[in-house]
Image (cartoon, rainbow, N blue to C red):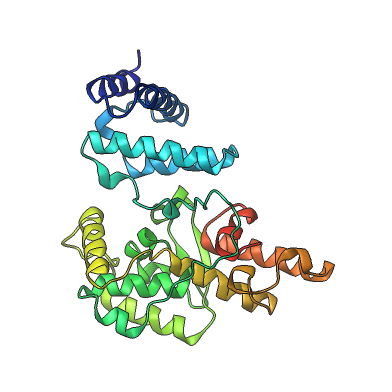
Length: 288
């Protein structure tokens, strides 16, 4: 038996949480997950070697295979159980929003957009965390992208470029610089980071992540993924001329043929700027 499969079975045998059916389902799911990780190229894993890249790869694989939202959430629950049992809880994001997994009802047309104001930012004591939040808001970046952001590399004048090593799925992308507010944020990020990133040289990513989570929580800020929702909705209005359905605008059903063409092109653009490959995922941010 392969090492990871064997160790996960042993983990299940040592931890009899839940009913017999729950235990059986968990073991079956973990066997499937171990097989999929091997098929994805991770052939030398053991139970202790679970990392964020493994979770990201699995979620992407499930999404591309059109697995239902409910099934993906169930599998993530099992992975969180695994991570907890081997004391690697931080490997898996606490919120499914981090993986762009929508609610089970895919389109709710209820906005999850959030903004951070100047008074909000003043409550965040760590200057690097403050700057990461501003970048999330200005460019729709994911948390990890904003923390690993290197202004000296990214600033290309009329757009920013994100490195493959800093993005979900390892795919580089560009985001347009559209206004003076973005330029001002980018300039200040450059002054703070110098030739480095928004992670101080004295810390690694995991240390900075803990600091980010602690300082945002202390400031009363939560669900900062809503900053990406706000960015998407703002871009939608710029590109179409009307509000997104989730922000109170018209649903796709009532749009004219010409408007539907504009809507689809806007969604494709926003999907690319947010680092997605599927136009359908924009419904999470914009509604439908």
